[in-house]
Length: 305
Length: 313
Image (tube, rainbow over all chains, first blue to last red; front, side):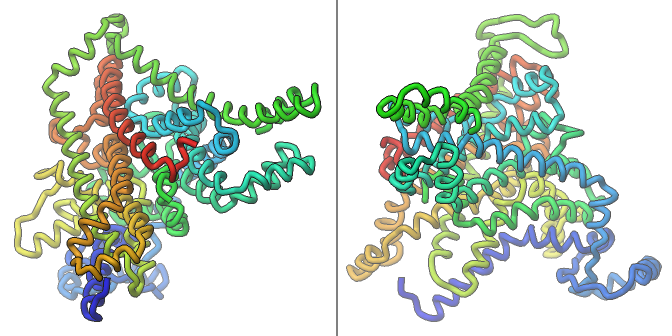
């Protein structure tokens, strides 16, 4: 549509404004994570962090003075505040952040790997050797991905309990693998369909066996798609809460469950909570930023390219 | 993969030429089995268990009274007024979120579908809420934004001279809808934007030359073109929102009373607070029935666009 210069600028301004509003909660989490707990409660709040050049000791002294004449400080409102990384230090070292982080890493990596290991060969079969049932199989796989987790949580909990998988990483990995396999099959199948089968046939003429075919032909040819698929599996595993919360509540708890323990932390540790939250979402947010294009394809199981 | 190569040596060896070709075909077809068997075990077995439990009277607090009672649970659940409230809550939450995210998502997608300064950054900012884990969004909104004493948004409202709002206390469902909609708007936006970008410029320009204004172009060209994208986005979102749990658990715990209890939360509550396995399973079956109705529509849409997806090939 043709717009005048001013109309264009107006639309751009509106778009930016909307983006800033939508992004604000995340920006605010980041800002709060850089404040001291006391600063985090101040209203009107300071918005812009500036690097602190003072040593930790001076900081403490400053703090002591500030508490003495709090009233005076409150009046001199400043939009700037000195950023501190102290919340991150506390979140990591004092709050046992490491255990859930390691759990999440294990769970995410292994459930993604297992899903790829089973899903890619299946996608290969469905892409190149479809038979009468392939159609049904594909649609059935979609229905398993769409199954409401609440519909199967009771037996999963009881089965996990009876198989001693309750509160173990393995228990969660088994469930998440099941969550990711349909995604892998749908996505990888659509990527494989873009690869000319003749290349693979030519390879076979040259005496390449099946394992070599995967290793030297299939995987390199679909590498970008494979990367996107893996990334999406990781995002889903990283962010899942319902299964984790019911199956792995303490020893094997991943970050989602750990963060949910801040549910009742009303008014306390807002800054540290923000730091822990920021750390928890950082890997997935960055991964998602880089895979924006593939995100659409993955989210719709390849139904939208 | 490794166990398949094991089978390959068994099948491939006996005959050469034709025989080898046939077994080779078979082997490649069999590559689907590990995934298929795995999926059957992890999804259908629990499903059968749920079905089985749904016909039993079984409260874990009274295991001695466990026994089959036919369809009693189904009747008990469906004649319970609370269950209808829960279904209504689920519908309101899902419906409101889908409507809000559709309007916002379409608006954002239309705004992003043109060249402007910083488009990449804007797009990145807009998709981020979707990448945040739901428990973080919930904790963030509850404690940092909406809290009556310390929340940023509450502070702003107070500063403008209004009484201190208690969003989660006064309108719990509205708050939950806001949080969930904030998370899911990017999903709608991304899919609709993909749709807009596949729209040919010539078509729009031709309409413009014919004198069609923006509202007409939107109605007669853009929206019809987007139909398939809208259907896919809406149906998938319905399926995901039906299962919302984390945000409710963290912000309201389904309350006050059962005002924000949806089907997922109710099942969790029934199973793990009331420890009533029978009723929880029955509600689970109802949830699966509801989801499958939506899935049926989704499959229809996929089938219709099968030339894109290749489902019918």
